Length: 159
Image (cartoon, rainbow, N blue to C red; front, side):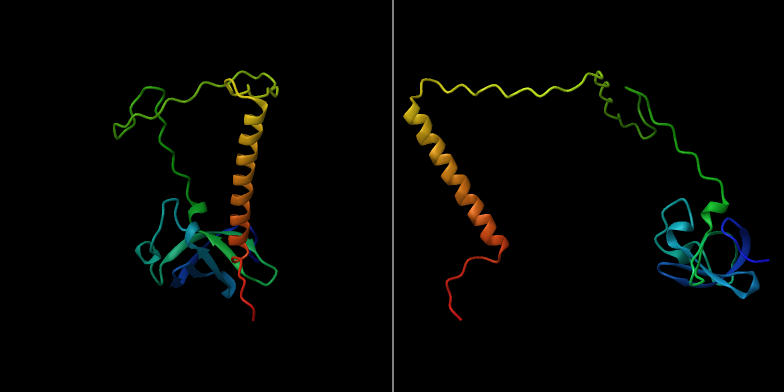
């Protein structure tokens, strides 16, 4: 019987690496269980969960055209239930209060509104132009400095 994606078979762990475990399958084939497919919980070190020679039940996730077989141990087990989240104002199991969820915004279409002009006080046209010119020159100087830093700096050396 040829292996197919979705099959659940028994196999023997033949090697453990930091990234996953190799499992010997029926018909002399070998597949890899990636470390993320070993358990629903975080696994730092595979040797704490699996050992060489251990018989495991695996599910075939994929079979690549070059013959590589991806396997999963955790998909042969039921997914654990997640704990219920506390409602507004309730305390969680460890006693922390969770922040209240924001109320949902009404489903009105957004319309662009210009920002109200900042109060200028009693400035003459010349004062406003001088202020604009000063700010513009500062922004251009900042932009030039940032641009030169991205290019590796400006150098007047000759080679």
